Structures are given as C-alpha cells and as structure tokens.
Length: 226
Image (cartoon, rainbow, N blue to C red; front, side, top):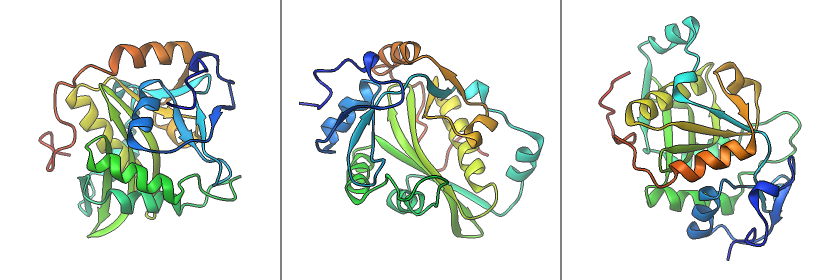
C-alpha cells in the first residue's frame, strides 16, 4: 500500500513531506499523482512524498506569451517533438545545476520509474532541438485532464520556454484544464503560473483525474502546428 495511506494529503505539512520511503513502482506512482502527491528526493537519496500548500499551477489560458517569446518561437532553427527522447530529456534535467541544491532529486531509480511510465503512455516529454541538436525539453505526468510537470532543462537560451510554449499549445488544443507546477519558481511565474490553496488543488484533482481529454496531445507531428 502507498506510504501515505494513513495520512490525509489535505493535512500534510505545508512545506514538508507527507511520508518517507517506499518504492517507485508504476502503480504506486500513479496512485500518488491521482491523490495530488508527488515524490521528491531532497537529499538525492531519501524518497519523500509531498503535497505542499499552496500549490503552484497554471491553466493553459494563463500562459503568458510575451512578444519576445513569440519572436523566439518564429525562429527557423527549432524542431519540437514529443515522446521521442524521454530518458535523454530526464537525464538532461538531472544534470542541471540548480541554486541551493547540492544534488539532484532525479535519481537513477526515478529515471527508471518514469521511463517505465513513459513506456506505459502516462509520462511524456517535449524535446526541443536547434538545427538537430537537443538543447531543451521537459517531462511530466498526464492523468485525466491534468498535466503534472516535473522538470525542464535548456542548454540554449529560451529553449525551455520553447518547450513549455509547445506543451501549453498541445494541452490547450487537447482540452487539458490545469498544469501542476508543484512548487514556485521565478521562471514559471514569468510564464503565468500562480498559487492556489491545497484544498482547491485537491478538489480539481478529484474532479479531473478520471475525465478524458478531448484530443490527443501526444501525437507527432502535432496537428495544430507551431
């Protein structure tokens, strides 16, 4: 059984772990996301399960497409795909040096677990290439009409923004209603993410997790274009 079975996600610490330990087998991960919980390894070793309050989220309609990003997206060198290099994207996210973090939470067990969820059609990646070279991307979990974003990376300026813009387009066109950004970052805030209460977030999860999106966000090429 999931480690949080004896604890109510709505009563978890606002900025701490609900539970610790356990495995990352697909059924347990899926149960966690369906309950509004995500795994994290703050030390790079100890598996923790989180449901923070408030929750950082974005609706596709709130995405902030600035004039500068619109101009960036028009550049001819970008090639954007979906689910073509999931593990590579995840490993690239793990390699990012982040302020205030001595190690990555994207451990080898996490890479194996999420890659398996990708094989099962639950986890998805967006890949961004510039003139054929992978320079950015992101990955996350799609459940019902929700997308739970996990991490993103870039090695070329604005490549992660290009990935996020294409993700939002795919989700919007396909009928998704919310992107779970989990915890606040200035980067996502600049793109339009905002805080909601944990109670409101859990209510949305319960309403949306079993609903089927109107379209397929994960086809290549994506019919809406770029």
